[in-house]
Image 1 (tube, helix red, strand yellow):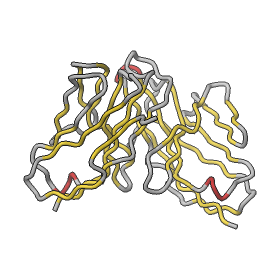
Image 2 (cartoon, chains in turn brown, cyan):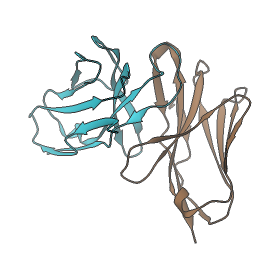
Image 3 (tube, chains in turn cyan, purple):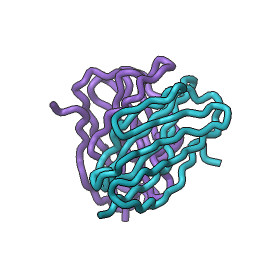
Image 4 (cartoon, rainbow over the protein chains, first blue to last red):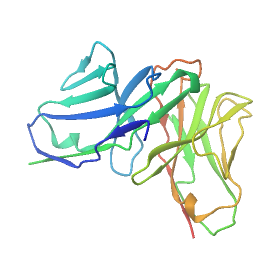
Length: 110
Length: 117
């Protein structure tokens, strides 16, 4: 089983829709979580960190559920420019490494 | 504002050839790493370094060597290229990783697309 798992999608949504992605993780020792965004044939870039209390950044909301070992990303009022692959990432301090999920592809359409 | 610079961006090798992917960062980050990205596999860590003179293996280190003689540079060497090493390689650096904690932001280079025939 992969340490971080995501539904690869694609999620095809109309502009203005709300869309949510979930990501599950298997390593209960994972300390921190993040969402990265990767545009086609580009490098990943940090979208937001995920805090236990949940956090919001504009149209984006991230939440962590440690009991069920999943994190989520909610995007409201989707824009065409939101089309990208969203990577779920977990950090395990003992190994000093970030583990990336395979990504969920989002396509926002007119 | 260079950030993380990788060269070359594209490379075609024949099986058995060796080469070095260069990576340099100008942000004074202690932590540097190399990932490869393959369809359906996500980003997988090859090697990483928490400071000059210190390197460690990641998830898929076989067939690759690294060294870290300076804070700025972290080259990745392919010793004898194989078709299984056809991939997109990303170098990344971070301020906050390496001390058992993470501020989370890895800064990536633009990637190097390697094809091994």
